Amino acid sequence: MKEPRILIIDADESIRFTFEKFLNKAGYGPVVSVGTAAGALAAVNNAKFDLVIGDILLEDVKGPELLKQLRQAGVDCPIVMITGAPDIDSATEMVRLGVFDYIHKPINKQLLLRFTGQALRHRNLQKEKIKLESENEKYRRYLEAVFRSVQDAVITVDRDMGIIQLNEKARKWILQSSEASTKIPDSLTDIPGEFGESCQHDAALVVDQRTDVKEHRIEWVRQDGENRIISLNAAPIHDDTGSFYGVVLVARDITSGGFLPDRDFTGSFHGFVDNSPAMLEVFNLIQNVGKVDTTVLITGESGTGKELTAEALHAESPRYDGSLVKVDCASIPEDLLESELFGHKKGAFTGADSDRTGRILQADGGTLFLDEIGDISSRLQLRLLRFLQERTFYPVGRDKPVHVDVRVITATNADLQDKVNRGIFREDLYYRLRVVEINLPPLRARRPSIPLLVNHFVSRFSDKLEREIDGISDQAMHYMVNYSWPGNVRELQHTIERACVLCQGPTLSADCLPPEILTSESHGTEVSSGKPYETTPSFLAPPTPLSVDPTKVQTTLPHKSGLSDVEEILDALQRAENNKAKAARLLGIDRSTLYRRMQRLNISPVAK
Image (spheres, one colour):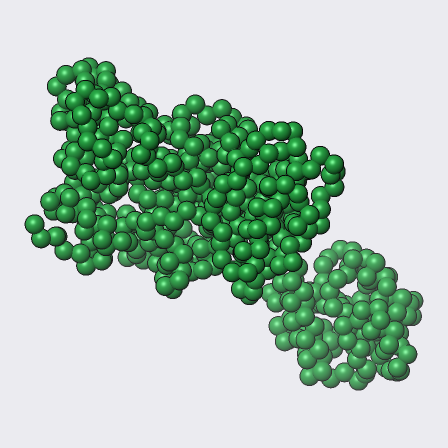
């Protein structure tokens, strides 16, 4: 313990002097000594002590009464009582009153130092316990805030279907299941109607098989006669030891207009241009999670809008007037990323010719966005985990900690769970980052929004390039609606920019599109001359809704592992005829990133 304060209470001045001398020479201190109970109470009122050593027989008060008075004065540290005449009754009374130890005289140096060391170690454990309890309580309140704020109905049950916890939305839905019921049942099996039966069925499957029940949809006729469409999924809950604890059920009203209670999104939201049901759910989630100052992990394929999502979360948060500091973890060399994040002191390493303020400190009072978090080294993973736990860090070359108030948002197109399973990403950091996960659906899962995006980009680039382009042909739109878009919205944006450059008239036609779109096998039908495209053709698969569980036990949509998939890069190279710049555009990444990934994965250009 650093500089423990010790209080000695003894009427014998020589004993006080001897104890103080022994303790100071052993490195303890400061040591305060008094000869009366009144002096002891005055001392503890003026300072906090880590150990009290007191004589059981003082002139003004006896040991048990002294102990009571010290506790009433707020002394919570170990107290050791010493006596010259030990007896069973007094020892029993002292233990009952919470004394740490009861020692009889004479006391030599070795005995004094031994029980002092034991008591101070106990004090250390006390402080650590209080700190951990405080952190756990803070984290619990954090999760409860997330639990309350999410618009989904969330119910957790134990292995016997007993209801453990539910949020306000779930409470309302359960009461709407039975017009005669005014009380929330204790068991999931007592919830009537289609909603209750579906919840029971899914929870029973999870209990029996210990696996997720993927999202499915039910029709629920409420007691007021209204028919609602409910998206329902379930997942197992495990405790810290990995033991099965229970089930979490997440239900969402996806009836047309049913999942947007707070804001009417008309196709534009913080830079997003989209009106598909899948993205409307994402917008609603951003709106709600943005209000809660918690860590968010954004997942999705390259080009789906992860950076835009981070900007939207920042704009929706109470930190909107603070800084949003962005760091692309994959674009900064591994040996410089630590300094870039945490800063460094002049002379900390070769090339550090001046002090540098790291990105974390720059984001103080605002938001830190770490893109491609799956690429950071194991050393940096540990440093980031400690920072997230303690909200303090040490700049490189400094020994004085820096405390910051920062919200952390991370993003990745990699499968972090797979990296955790393979031992290349820390599991504890993964769960710290994934308090709430927002999974962005790929563009092919939200095809009805493609015409809206196409017209938006045509308008933008016709103005930027000073071209008088005021429309797009039905054939060109049909090709774009039916293309798979592996590079997602970023690839669509680049495609429209290219088409606007090549367009010679007021209408963007099919011959302005790249060959891979015109020859793609993803078309559902051939384009016949003069036949108008359908904005939502019957052969398009419906978008898959987002699945999010804010209690950290979450079923998310399956998605490709992005650039960690060798086959995806080889496919892009083949379609681009080994043109790396074109392949990078197809993948929705920078060319330098593609080069780096090819080198790391030992990928050679494909044979023509």
